[in-house]
Length: 220
Image 1: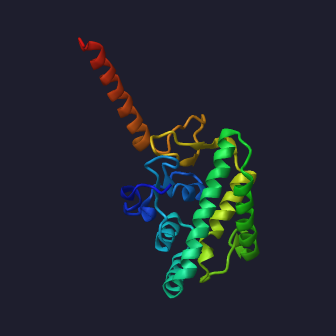
Image 2: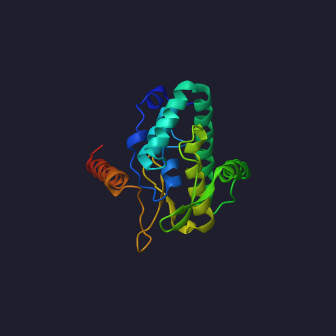
Image 3: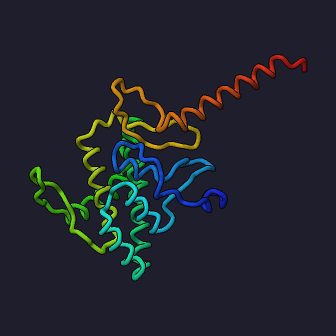
């Protein structure tokens, strides 16, 4: 079932979303919120949204972004297909990390989709020299729209295989569900943003207490 028009029509904030996930792949998953609720909000509805997010998150160099924008204007259908693949990857990552957080078995369909994306990513990747030694990289200024997916996929592979999955958490905020890597010393971080979801939860509890108190004082 599609989200209400008032939700889907909201202007995308892809290029200015808070980057609170602690890993590129988690920030990418957080381009949607409120999954499974009437307040589901998706900020990746057009290819330019995906490109704006990649620029904002540092997933792509500015020169590559310009090349992709030019390519998308020439080949809009290819750009749209890349957007669909990116969104499918995002939802597969959400399913995999959600399973890891809850201790459930990883969904086989989500894992299969991710592995297909990973195979394409690694086929395009190369080892290149850097000032500190060597690093993974991809062809510079590639006009392929899938170029936006490659660093996200590698980030997810690294977190799934070498990261501390016990520190990946899901924000319990109302209509949120964002993922984040808890890097706090005591591992007790609860909210994606204390100033947003944490404050909203405090306000809801406050109003609930006020309503209960008013009901208790009512003579009726």
